Length: 295
Image (cartoon, rainbow, N blue to C red; front, side, top):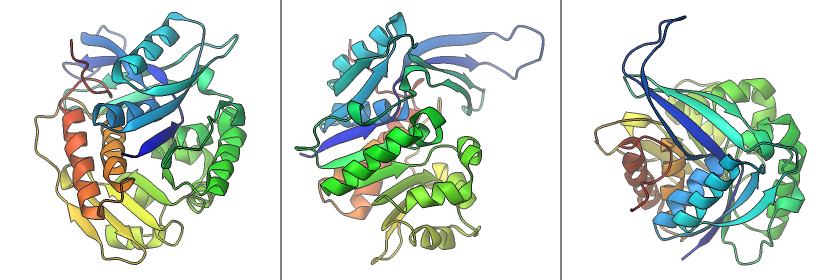
């Protein structure tokens, strides 16, 4: 079984599920919960509970939130390199989920800022590396994240990249983001992000455009499933798995974990996409971005 290194953020998610829309200036009742989050830590958690050895970089503050997110990693069986950053707080994301299951997020990177080569574990023994775009878009982490990408590429390990949300990518621009895509082996992104980064609107043309940058492109399409293509193969499509949706938070991370589980073990593209769809379906039926812990 493959061993995967996940590079990016670990945070505490504070989630509010709303029964109806927000009315400005008045109280809106919500069901509030807290869970571990952060794209890299989420991917590692879904990998671990699905039988894949996973390891994540964990930069936290010396606070209660940091103890909580580390404890969750232990519960999931995720390996980690922990660094407690003096004077920093653990990253926190506030998440509002509306009555349709869609989410709005307010991230504070906290101790994740400043990611650098000192955070990188010894690469021997890993089979692939996943990196989240959040650490590249964050100016305080960008230089270190680029150094990590360079180190990974020089090691010969395949690098899987999720560029993050359109809202954050717009902070650095399309040209800069496309340059980062040209440095990786596989891109996993959703349809909105893919179209944003391309000059095309038709998804098949979007994929072909992104393939000029990276050898493998995977596009998550929500209820329409997912598609993927290698430079030397035909487009592969899989449907979404129908479930009762509670929240879309973390679904993309769960999909990435499912895909990587099969792809890193040299499975077929179709099987990897189907695995991604299966684990994403598990995620959207839950509140939070992580698997349910058995009690």
